[in-house]
Amino acid sequence: MSSTYAIAIRDFTKRYGSFEAVSNLTLEVEPGSICGLLGPNGSGKTTTFKCLLNLARATFGTMQVEGAPVQPATFEELTYVPERSALYEWLTLADHLEFNRRSYRKYDAKRADELVNLFRLERKKKVGKLSKGQQTAVALILAFSIRPRILVLDEPASGLDPVFQRVVLDLLIEAAAGGATILFSSHQIGQVERAADRVAILKNGKLIVDGTVDSLKGSEKVVEAIFDQMVPEVDGLATDARVRRVERSGRILRAYVKEDSEGIARRLSEYAPKNVAVMDLNLEDIFINAVGGEIPMIRGGE
Amino acid sequence: MTYAQVLRLRRALLVYGTVVGGLFLIVVLFGHLPNATFDVETTFGHHATKSVSSINLSGLLFFTGWVTIIFATVISTSLNRENDGVEMVWTKPIARGRLAFWYIALDFGAILVAYAFAVALCVLALASFGLLKYVSVDGRTIPTLVIGLGVAFMWYGLLQGLSSWQRGGRGGMVIGLSWAAAFVLTSLAGATAGGGLPLLHSLFTALDVVNPVAYFSSYTLSGYGAHASPVLPQALAGTLMRSVATWGIGILGCAAAIAGWKRLEV
Image (cartoon, rainbow over all chains, first blue to last red; front, top):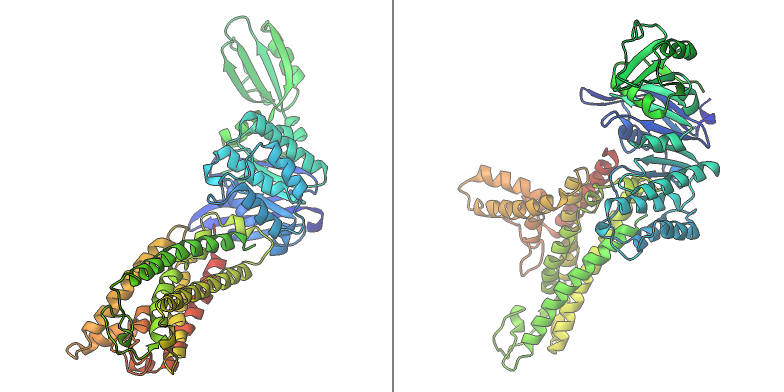
């Protein structure tokens, strides 16, 4: 049922001439959730956002927000922060806030004030004179100042220092806690891991990973063995059907294990390591595993 | 939703007002120099005469029409200006077509203000010289007003239509090229009017149907439309036809601009 999803992208394909930027993408985001869209540069994240918001036309497929295609009225409740600044460089922050006030019935001046103070910006300074990070902050202030039900954010922490990146994450989490649905992209995998409850990874326009962060992290285990000296040869480990990949780095051996991680750990213990630990995957592992090679689609559960 | 455009037009009108107002001040100051005199018989001469008869308002409107046309072309690429960052306006709760219509309506309002301002300054200048009593209105006045504004709107509409669907930043180039093309085409149509090159003349006059300068330059001391123009097709002789053509092409240009802008992808 499309109406149960805040954002529903189904069988979406976008072609530019003979080049297929996005192929047959289906992505559904539940209300009140935070979905992180990851992928290397050129993987189709921005194209997906643009087609979702009618800024570009999908070649095939349907894109719905709250059960209907995006219409002008949708933007009363949906805000978008593009990857590249779309602000007017010749206007000040105060002008932009006034623009927002005149454009949205729901504009919340008090919230805007809070956000301006949070990002410590000058209202009277022209946007063109602000740093890239400050311009990102202006775009975020505009997006959050109407308390939207849906936020689509393309690299929302781009150019911000680590302190303000944390602020942005807190804003996302706070908005979702208040019932907002967020679809965002980021190259900062740590941010996505902290904020998102669902992750989708695109590679060459194709969805290769989709699932909740917890289920994806639990889909494999990492068995890490630390040795006193160089990692010894472990017979048959790389070809073991339970092991998907083995990494060796100096004194550390990491095995990415699909099943029976304890059995693999016991096997490594036979080589007298200093320490053996079984760990969950982190999102960075998942991302690198996914985009690093030709890997079949991983579904991480609902 | 049109707040940025309102600010943009306010800024354009301020610059326009400063430049035109500055020119007005210079004219007035020079006009009040001890030896300055005016021959109002031939509108704005600069030698003494006692034979003051009248200043026809149409001549004044023709002059201010040029100033207005310059302003109209400068602001004519407002939709194109949004294209470099169009996400800002396209993700606001308003239909693109409606938003584009409002941009054009605001621009047209600004063109009217610019025209009225230029006329007001001319009237003030005449008043400062005590010449206002010689200003007369006759049958040429309304056609000059309608065609003068029509030409400004036609050029505005053509430039919107040519630029709205292009990548942001190309509007300036379109404006510059349009001025060059308009004068070259008018000159070519005029130069081939002697009868030696009838085929070429027909071609140039046909192209001049969409050339604002060809319409504007068809003004004579008898006003617009009293004579056939050597740079326009015979079918466009007469005030009514030229009025319909200028306003019609302007409207078509604006409609094409809105359609092109709506279909743009970023």
